[in-house]
Amino acid sequence: MLFMLRNLPSPFSIVVLAAVIAGLMISCKRTPADLPKSVAISTEFNVASTCSELYMTAKHDLQGKEYLYVAAKEGGLKIYDLSNNPKLKKTVSLSQLDSLEVMNLTQSGNYLFLALGNHFGTGLQSPGMAIIDVSDPVNPIVKSIWKDPTKISGAAIVEVDGNYAYLGAMRSGLVIFDISDKTAPVVESVFVPSTTYPDPNPDLTKFNARGMTVNEDLLYLCYDAGGLRVIDITDKQNPVEVGNYVNPAMSGKPRAYNNIVVDDTLAYVAVDYCGMEVLNIKDPANIQLVDWWNPWRCETNALNWFVSDGHSNEIVFDKLHKLVFMATGKSDMDVVDVHDPKQLATRFEYGGVNNGIGTWGLSIYKDNIYLSYICNALSWPFPSNWTGVRILKYEVY
Image (cartoon, rainbow, N blue to C red; front, side, top):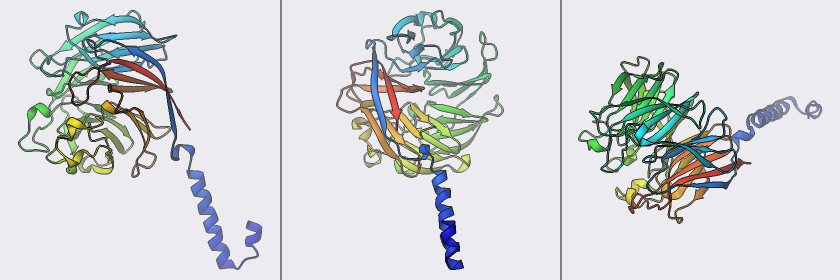
């Protein structure tokens, strides 16, 4: 090509050469991770429970041990051996957890942190947290239990970053712990974000600290009807809200910001029957909507929450393949391609609205997905007569 250009008029040569170089630069930048994806998902195992023990979420041991930890609500903490067919090896019962139900869990090193306290229906409990030593997963040791008997709201999530744990205590807000001593966690602060945003006359039962993620000195909190809050946690004893956001299209309709993952300056937020919002969070004081994956058209009617084909809850971001996985209730699970955050594309839906069961939790370890189902006798938000974990295998090509 360069030899041929020597024989062309000089101005034309420059134009063609510039086009060739630009094309090469674009070609070099379009790595496989940037391209649209096809996703194949297959079911490996069904781990069934009974409707007296709702399997809220399940997570593989992060240190590579072939064990699965399940927050089983009334059933306590369940530990499964995955070395062959999944087999229940141990249960940490409610009697070992101050009678508090297990709603969520996370792992840090050899320790599990449990978010305790039922937040469903009328049987609300005190918010609590337990720390469990799983150095030997079949012989877990309860190191400590904390609960606030003065509050009745339950807890939805717990996250850990270094020597601090963060508990989403529903109506009781955000509780920050120093966990340097696993036998005696110390409450650093309790922070309840304002309930007058976005509505000046709120229904206080709808404001709940749910999903969250910690990114250095900022904590991104899904505050249910209160939208997304950004909290500066530099001073653990004095957290400060530095930003907030709600989708203006949902004014006057139910809002339920449930869970969040962050990738650099973008946040992917599971918004219940409203799908997923992609937000630019580079400036916490001026959060902007980038795109909205809204297959159920939640903004068209305030009653859509009751009849929606999906309710987005737990969410995972596959950074390598630029895919977001969401537990979506009646729709089971949706996979959204976010390689171009301004043009979201559905890549896969697992299960679907016609199988009569619905999900709550989702986690990923390597190429396995752990999808948690809950029973629900009510017709809303979705009926479901099966609880347990489906272990799936996924491939991207």
